[in-house]
Amino acid sequence: MPTLIESCLYHASMKNAALAIGRHERLESLQVLRGVAAMLVVYNHVGDAVRTAAERVGSSLLAPSADLVKLGEVGVDLFFVISGFVMTLSARRFSGWTGSATFLAARFNRIAPLYYLVTLVMLANLLRAGASDELTAESYLNSLTFIPIFDDSTYSWPIHFLGWTLAFEFTFYVFVALQIAARLGTRAIVLLAAVAVLPLLHPLTQNADMAWQMATSPLLWEFALGILCYMLWERGLLNRIPRRLLGALALLAAGVLVAQATAPGHSLSFLAYDPVNYGDLHTRAWAFGIPCFVITCFVVTRRVGGSPAALLGRSLGDASYSLYLTHVLVVSVLAKAMELLWLPADVYVVGGLVASALVALAVYRWVEKPLLEAGQRRLRTWLPALRGGTGSVVAVARVHAGTDRPRRS
Image (cartoon, rainbow, N blue to C red):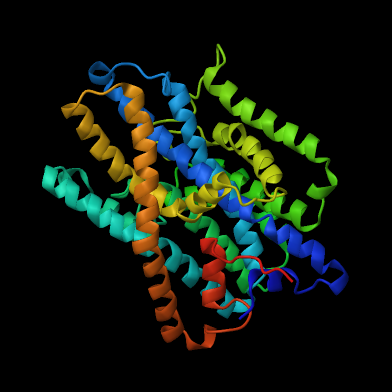
């Protein structure tokens, strides 16, 4: 069964093997970045909950303003850029309609089981609270299909509200699958061109059904930036930029993000409470997307060491999907705790972040990984033609889960 290194070296000569292996080792840093992205989203929701309870717990030094808390939403945009990179790398493993089916099956196996499970927990909470009447038939359907194929021109929010981001992810996966079906999996430039051009058609689809709006959304540009980052990395161009310069650019990009939330006269007004229906996605794609692109370009060139901080970063990266989905349950418990027990606001901020991380690590170990492995076994049973070789179900699932580790030779 080919590993990710073997796929990366598929067209490489022995002369270039050491360089390619070294570049793959640095992909560990993308796992750490995933963890950072998830924690940013957690901070957004924890900070918002603490600020909502300010009359009870007081003001917070760690969540001092609404805009700074909103800045945590950039974790979503960072995920989109990383996804553009990783899916473009993964597409090289597949070819034809069989490869396309394998890719989509692996993505569904990676995303759907844990999402459905957490959605059921959230639905149970809504039923217990008597709030399920707010859900429409489309909300239930979008919770199953991810892409809102049953919506009209207005997006119906799924039961797990973060499902809106997975709708954009699956929309992008469809484009990747079509590229693979056309036997163009190794042509990143083709995918980049398609994903970069489609948002230009968005003015023509603004009143169309929501599935078409997502297929031309400006947020696709963030995936395109991830594809571009992959192309620069794959060609070795990022390594030609002096590390200090690339690091300075990444630091500047982070500063730009913070300045958008803190500088006088600036605000994150383009981040609407309902980002799909009312958000300024053009502004978001560039205001958040470009800094995330620069940061990703820097991170992908860095090695991850063996320090305790690096180990924690890799662990959070591995558990980033569990963290992304389950932290909303932790935040709901946090909100109840603030109603019952007075503690300083920043204790709740730190406590919410730590508790979310610990719950995610446990869910990843005892729920997400077993679900993923069980899904891989089912796919091998149902799709025997896809059991091995380039683009195998197990190999790509490991890549997508971020569990494929480099082998040293």
